[in-house]
Image 1 (cartoon, rainbow, N blue to C red):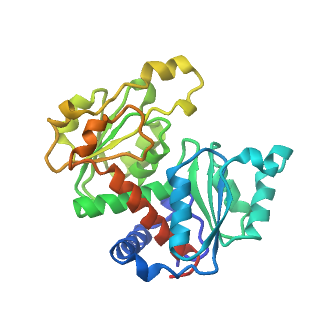
Image 2: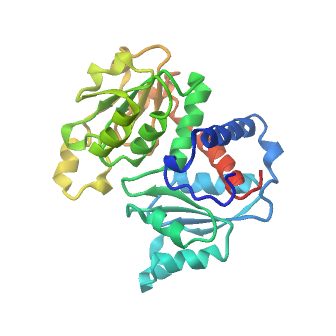
Length: 307
């Protein structure tokens, strides 16, 4: 039963629950009009302490397409936190007004802390460099729609693997399915955290390798997950400038890729995928955006007990 549950990381959901949510998302994709009234009278609170375009608008569109309403903020400077109100008190207050909370914060662990004080479900919409579980649901819906299953793939994670919360969440999720392999493509300074290797890959018996050049790996991939180098995660601007253009996917590199490889990206894109790649049929990142709305519709409907 998902009603009333918090979703803080992919591990908050069992494999069966992920399949249930993604299965519902697939039903909504086929006939969205059939679900246009299931959250009538329900309210989503979007608490975004960090800038966002896709995730916030996706949550808001999801709730409205389910027939519900949305309250919240996209700029923490306009809230009582500027007066010194604690997150715990903010959550206690908002819990009195809404039926479900979607929260983004630059502070790692903030969503978990919020769940400790909330009387309604909290969905982590991103907490620092930790997790982004609804992006993972988005990715899973996209992968199954385009590849048919979540098993037996060679997945390339490319770019900022150190701070990229979407990468961490997806690695955790896909490690739960059989016969997946990972190729970790990044400069040494942005390599994936040791805890992902030691606590996720190794216990699950996941085959993986680390490389520094995209050209050395692209030909073997079934899925290429590109990420941007995130300026907001750096303390030293010179490090950011040095690393920001480390990986740029263009037509020339795509010549080496499999004909049925798919390219995913959580967006926003900066320089890491050249616009010329957008016309390639393997580019799935804009489809991914739309699938994300359907994934969030399914999750909201389940957590609020609407379906």
